Image 1 (spheres, one colour):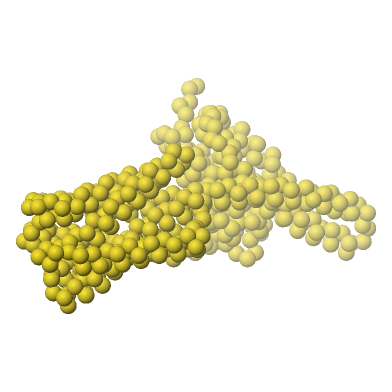
Image 2 (tube, rainbow, N blue to C red; image 1 turned 135 degrees about the horizontal axis):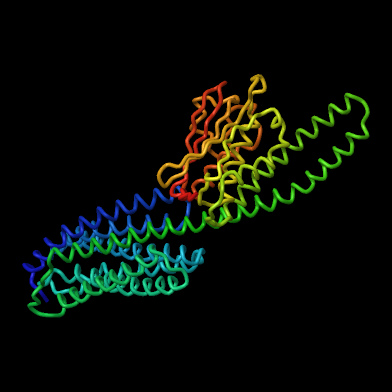
Length: 473
């Protein structure tokens, strides 16, 4: 066994390593607890407790080393500290692995099994705390080194086994967080086994030359950092997967529900049209018109939701086309909208107004902008107009839609592209139109600018990156 002088040198080197690792454990525990407060997932809580136990293990280990002498009074304190740091260290291992098991299997251990593990932890810690009773009083470090070695052996085997388990899970679903975690677990397991061999040789080899450099502490810290980073990345990737699945299910629900509801709405519109021919009284016709107006608004909402769901699922297909073709296509859909016949369309159709982008996505954009311009026109103005302009800017294309309608208040302009936002309580529609516009433009690498003044009208400028096509006469 090594002598006390070498052991004092060992303590001095180990002190700074343990302090740094304990501080990192506390920081990581706070980070994981913060995520637990957000997501309320049990494995985050267990991981946070694990790293807190790790910090306690290191601090209590230093306390055990401080009382490592042959004084009967100090032996009592040493026994208590040894018992405490072994419980903290083994709980750290168990909670870390248990949290990982929860994340992988989505279910916890049975209470009986969990209590059994805690009983093993207590018995192992109790056994370690009384080892000093059997040591030779001339050798004062057996009671310190043996518990540390036992904990290192358990940690090494447990982390290697956990790393192999996570690695096998990763074959089916490979992610950065999982890969980083299983690599860090296995490396940390072998590092712990290396500590076990050091402690083993300290006990059983005479005049063992102990060499522990500060680079070992740096390696320990890096491995612990990798474990912590792997946990956080795995958490974020798991949440992203969950959100993507939820979004797909929500989109599917919205699409199917809106599609199914449009059928009875269409039937209702047909019945209203039949009733209009049968009702002769003026008051009855007034009520029929009111019902038709409300049902058409409901149908418009369902149409917006369907467009939103369809737009999410639609893949991008680039093609070269003339803007005039699209404008004619959109006008054919909008010419029967209320108030459209009183609005003058100002569009200088040119054969060289050609661009290359996704036809469907741009049609969604132009259709919504023109529909809003018609919907919010100002009937009090004698010359109501919508002006559409095409401009080539180097490799980009700018399409502007200008109207002299009601306009948008300045305080509402930065919110009009938000989902379900309506500038006033009198605004019609679902509040999805401009949100769909923004979403469609993002898919074709385009942006939109708004300039509006209340009572004077609005101008929307759509800038499509890299959509310019060289025109040859």
